Image (cartoon, rainbow over all chains, first blue to last red; front, side):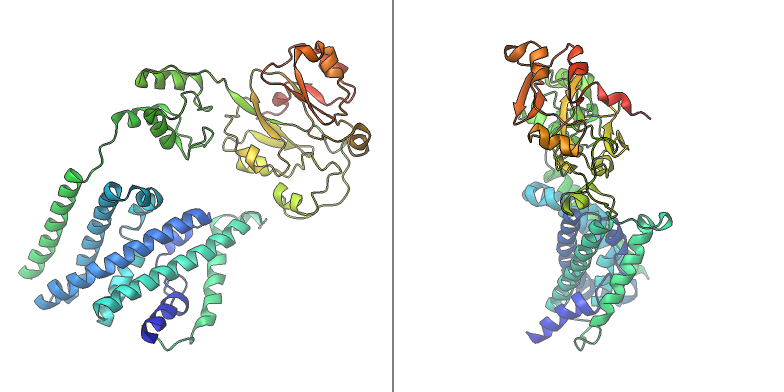
Length: 195
Length: 269
C-alpha cells in the first residue's frame, strides 16, 4: 500500500510529467487557456494513459520480449497507441455518448502524444509488473492533470495582466511554465523514488 | 529481422482490421441533414443562438427543438437556406445588435477616484464598484470590447461604443459587462435611451450631466402612456422595443440629453 502511495506522490509531485520530465508540453501550453478545457483534457489524458499502459505492457511482455524484439518497442507502441485511441474514440461515441461529448475533441489530440508514449517507455525500461505499470501511468496522468489545472488557473489570471508587448501571449506562458517547474523542484527528495 | 517485420506488420494489420470493423459496425448513423445545415451556418461558433457552437445549433434544428432564425450572424439568408433543407418556415426574428446604455463620457460623468489598476471592467468593478461616480454607468475599461469576436466595440472617451455594421448580436458583451448595461436591441430601432441609472433625478445629476431623471417627457411627447413607447423602471426611462418610437423630435426635447438617434454609428473602422 505504502509502495503505491509512493508511486502516486512520486509521479504527481516529485517527477511530475510536465514540470520535471518535460513530457506533454504541447497540450500543457495548447489547452491551458481555460480551466474547463484543461479539465476535459486532463480527463482524456488520464483515461488514455491508463488504458494505453495496460495494452503496451501486454504487447511488450507477451509479444515483443519473448521474440527478443525489445529494441523495436517504440515503433510498436506508437502503432498500438494510435490505433487504440482511434478505437476508443469510435467505441465511446457509440456506447458512452455523454463521455464522448466531454472528452471527444481531446482524444485525437493525444493520439501520439509524447506523455502517453513516455509512460509506456518508462514502464518498459523499469520492467515493472502489470498493476504497477497501470497504476504508475494513472498517477503520472493525474500529475499531468494537476499541472495543467494549476497552469490554466494562472493563465486565466494572467489574461487580465498587462505584460510588456514582447512578452504577450505564449511568451509569458512559457515564462510562467518555467517558474511553475522551478516551484515543483521544491518537492524533490519528498519520497524515496521507486521511479 | 524477419520476425520483427512480421510482428510489426501483424500489429498494424490487426489494428487496421479492428478499426475497419469498428468503423463499420460501431459507427453512429448521423442524420445527413446535420452536415448540410452546419454548412449553411456561418461557422463563427459565436454562441449567440444559445448553443455551444454552430454544430450544436444545427443538431437542435434538425431535431426540431430550436427555432429556425436564432442565428443572428447568418441573418435571413441563412435561415432561408436552412428552411429549404428542413422544409420548415423561417421565423423572422430580425437582426439584433448590442446597445451600450450609457452616454456619460469623461467630461459628463464625474469620476470619484483615480483607478490605476488592471485595465478591465470586472476588476475595476470589484474595486469598490469602480471609479465612476455613477454606480450604474459604463466604466470604459473594455471588458465588452475584449470579448467581442468581431471587434465591433471600441472605447471612446471612457465609454464603450458598438459599431452596428460589425455587430452580429451574439450577446457575449452582455454577459461580460459587470454593470449589466449592454442590451441586445432590434437593429431597426433608431431611438434609444442611453442611461442605466434608476435612482432619483437629483441623485443622478450629482454624478452625471447626461443621466435620465425619469421626467416622463419622452413618454408625453411620443403620444402619452397609451402609445406605450416607453417603460419606466424607478426613475429610468426605457424604450419599449416591442413598439419602438419613431418620432425623432422627442430626442432633442429630452431635458437630460440622455437620448440619441442611432448612436451605434458614432464609431467606425
